[in-house]
Length: 586
Ligand code: AMP
Image (cartoon, rainbow, N blue to C red; front, side):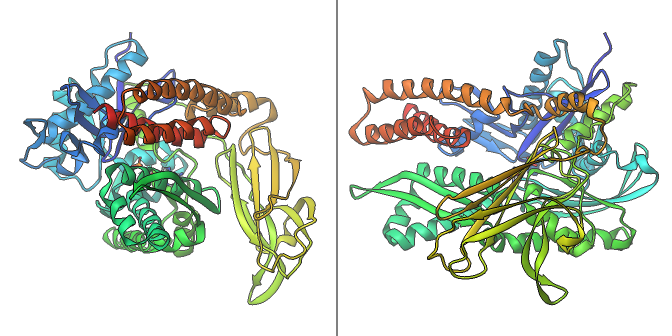
């Protein structure tokens, strides 16, 4: 049996482990359907060690028994408390690495003793050494430490088209780094790097939490908002809702922040229900993105290069799924960034590729299938300073991995507008009429009394069979029309008979069922879990105090209502009920 070397992305917020087997790169599942391990370690009240999601769940309630973001302390001669003992940063990191090692061993069915581990390009020798020690404590020989941007460039196969220079833009949960790299084949050299290790998607969540608190204050007054701020459970629920809204806004123009029975204040329930528009959210986070662009220019200057020397921009880190990131990068640097790989996983994939190169594996491409065309619709806007009715508005941009769904909001042009013609175009030209019209439909019967500027949400979904589904919906009334179009040659690199293989690969890479069955099986599985959770809550209800009982009944009802809704809603309500159970049991 060939000795396996795994690749590990030991991140500030999250960690992943990947491996190359039979030439294919595989990110190993931590639990069913989940390949990301939160980089958190905790001790339960009974002294049991918690690593990952369990530690993350405990953090809100027992921060003193939980350690997060230990990567920020690596290389310091310091100790952190966990329960009544102190541990070095290496020891805490080793607990995360040991869990990843166990997961890999369970998955591969053989011992795993060697790893390639990634670190930020700016890590000092002491920080690299500490990472190596963490590996050793965990029982892993660290055969190589590689830079995170190097790993990302390997996964994106950037150097395979000859010598190139790339910008690796990495925006994670709590850190931001940008690196300028020189690539040739599998050889990657980091020329310069800059960043802020206290900037990331968590700040975006915080802005949304602030928005929700402002709304609660406006609706209920200062006393109520102070009570919310003092309730760990209410704040945890807001935090969770904020992150879910942020993620929804990456694909949709609106997201709802809805938390029923957030709190009981002087006998009165406090509910939250407020909609957040993507445009308003983008205004909140624009200063953060501006800071990342400044850092990008500093990194370029550090490498003695200008934008025109850069061949491509690679996106890394979960928060780069925020559409404003790609948009601002394109506006500022004049180049659309590449984002075909799952940005949470590409560093681990690159570490596994490096490990595969060291152990002499032949490695197949990890690049996934993307649409070679841009699809969009037409709307009235300004083209070269003139108002023009057929400005092209792209919804799905070329090189987006498929399957994909994206939606945008449009506005009616005049009072009482009864119908809208929705054109569907394929192409790149800013004038939709210069692109190929691949479909057209009409939504009529809009409200006669609707003022101009009424909101119309149009959604494009493209699947791996090349079926484009376009739906247009009047936001206020829910009036909806749709069209389905078959796109010829919808896959960039594939013949039709290769579709099955492509589907398999995408499925393997993302752990998803591309035919939508995944959704229904996920939903089925979540329903079973939800019923088990409800049963447990009902048991607890029998011994709970009146106040806790009320919270439990609300939580149970929310999960029961969600059983008939979508998976996202179900997961959200289950999360809140699980938090409550955890709190009550603790
Ligand atoms: P990472 O540290 O790379 O795992 O990135 C984690 C961050 O990415 C967290 O702040 C997540 O909330 C954020 N994130 C994950 N998915 C999305 C998404 N679809 N849109 C925006 N942010 C996301």
